[in-house]
Amino acid sequence: MNGFKGNGIRIFLSYSEKDRHLAGMLKAQLNNYGIQIFLAHEDIPGGQEWEDMIIKNIKECDLFIALLTKNFELSSYANQEIGIAIAHRKTILPVQVDVKACGFTRKFQASRKLDRENISGFIAEFIKALQADQSLHKKVLDSLIDKFATCRSFNGAKQTWNMIDGFDKFSKEQLNKIAEACIDNDQIRGFFGTSLRVRVLFRIPQNRKALKPEILEKLKEIHKF
Image (cartoon, rainbow, N blue to C red):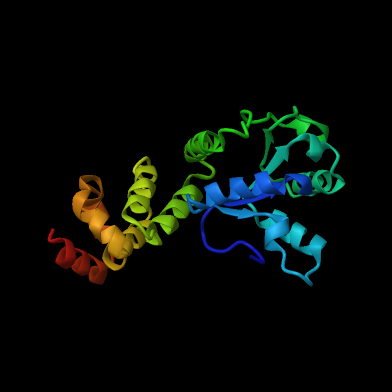
């Protein structure tokens, strides 16, 4: 990944190179929700200017997360990244792993602690917090819808929809993308047929009105509204 793509939420994860395994696990789990995560050791292709790519992706991120560990405290690169994020007025979220806020991160209220043995629990709470943040509301929903549209299993579609179902407002673009997924994705088509909640979404008059005519007709034909 040379840079972020699409409309979903974009997160720059700052960490010590010695904690790359932990950072990778966080990225993998957040990717399950359609959230884009930039990790320097994974996402900068060989031959590209490291510093230029770091600055570019910090500028483009919606949220900057500092993974606070004992190794982080000793990393000059990680602390430089925080300085760049501050300079570009990014929203900074320090996450405490095995140390308290240090250096520049003392300026910000740290999130709940991350237990290395319960990463999935941390991720679940983190997603809920993102949903509640009005400044990130649309981008979080965009990320979930992108993930929903590309689900490759019935269970994946169900899990992602359960997150989407926590939202009560959708843009026209979002509604059309959900409807297209219900038409084109076989796994979602199967889920759609058994999920009253998804069917109710498109029975609401204002939501049906938001759909493009050709999408609405296909939806009605396939799902027998």
